[in-house]
Image: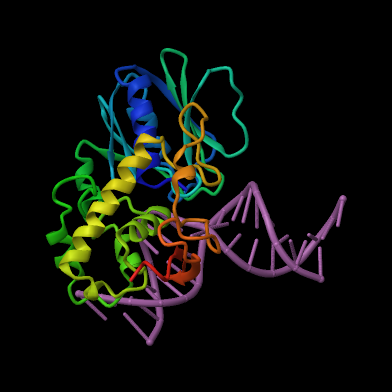
Length: 272
DNA sequence: ACTGGATCCTGACTGC
DNA sequence: TGCAGTCAGGATCCAG
């Protein structure tokens, strides 16, 4: 379940291994992902292009080719690996990018919630990127900004933190972690989060995400890095998956609730 | 405008 | 052991 740290870890690994390498082609074995993979336009744009650099916006990877930009979203079960050209694709390994070096970048996505799309020369104007909120690690995501966006909202703060129009990249795992670190109850109405709590939340979101990136992301179930390795942040989770266990801060018992149709673990004693 | 719920999909897990 | 049912979750879509 890749959230921002997993996507960023993937981006860094891809950039280190494949930036500047020419592409020879693409192989699409299953085009039915979240949206159909646009095989025709990609087969025109990919051969004889070069992967210039790899960027990230929210949870989208931007493969910047010399001929335009491919958007890759990992959905919930997607992962990318760099493999040897002789490695036979397994089930659910739907797309390969074939590099002139012989290496292949291989997309595996059992649940097919991911996406591979063409975004042309101005990806920031693509419909999926156009309405996104600020990046959580950039200065524009501030306590004042968050406080302003929460004003008057009655939905649970957890749901609002996971709303990509308010801030991108925060999914179910890191929302729960950040709320716990900030001492904010996940069910609190957005409009009842004051300036002080908003500041704490911004700090907590930043800290949690930055640490998770350093750890190579969180492998709770199936996420894997580009070389197949697990993310180490799972060991640092304070609440996610720990319902019934003692809160690491106050020793109260962590409780499981459903907020916005998502399971949510929190400490009823130190989150208010 | 805002809110919560349904939806897409498959694998892992639980309970009988 | 086998099978049916439930859950997981990002982002979009829809109804109220």
